[in-house]
Amino acid sequence: MVYELILSVIIIFLLILIWIMYKIGIQKGKSEKEIEWQSQLGKLRKDIADKQRVNIKGRVGETFAPFLEGFPFKASESKFIGDPIDYLVFEGLNEREIKGIRLVEVKTDKSQLSKVQKQIKDIVNKTSSDKISFHTFEFKTDEEE
Image 1 (spheres, helix red, strand yellow):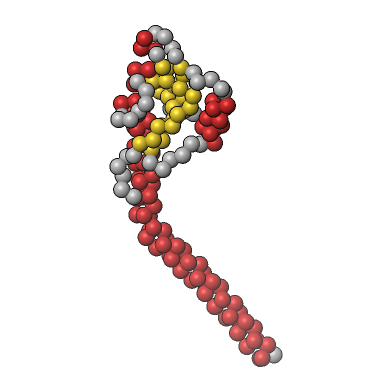
Image 2: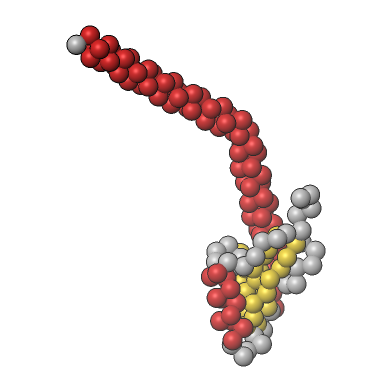
């Protein structure tokens, strides 16, 4: 009987000890995760800011592309749409005699055509008319990578 009582007390003590260790382990794990999160927070903020900066540069570049060196069409004949294609260019609009319609997508640095833009390009290129065409205008943003 005494042995059973001692055994019961030992089992209860061990269960309480296991429960305490479990709670300590959970708390320690939370602390380690919090420390890890805090150490990565600065890097995450920098990554987000860099992506936003690149996005803003791209949008500004798209908007002012007709005024950049190397843009193959007249700015006054280029009409900004933005999505899914950046510009519709009406060649001859200044003279009020349209000679052709050009779809122009502006890309910066390493950006590529989206799936929809590729589909539009394929459809336009399948037309055998030289009066309608798809062009991609690429320019660099001078960003060091």
